[in-house]
Image 1 (spheres, rainbow, N blue to C red):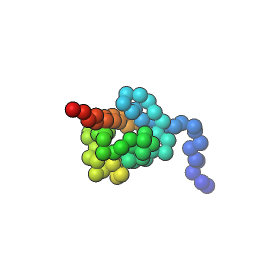
Image 2 (image 1 turned 30 degrees about the vertical axis):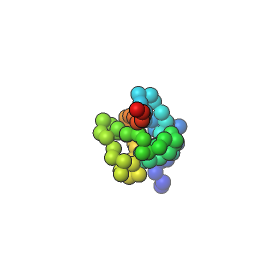
Image 3 (image 1 turned 180 degrees about the vertical axis):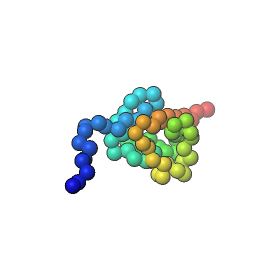
Image 4 (image 1 turned 135 degrees about the vertical axis):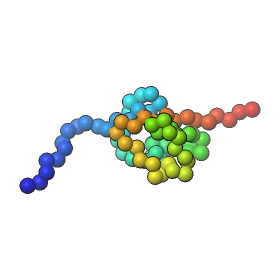
Length: 77
């Protein structure tokens, strides 16, 4: 017999800059940056209180319940 499939409509959630957000198709930090239409060269990402190196954006997964802070850099003079 086949195992029972999870047919609930529960959507995975993350906390993004203090607010709840559905996880949707976001699976890696790079996916989130793309979805938010951010320039990866101009943001810093903190995942569960740890800074994610820019070189690891494409390989760092985002999971249900994660807390993410996105900080943008602003130039000026």
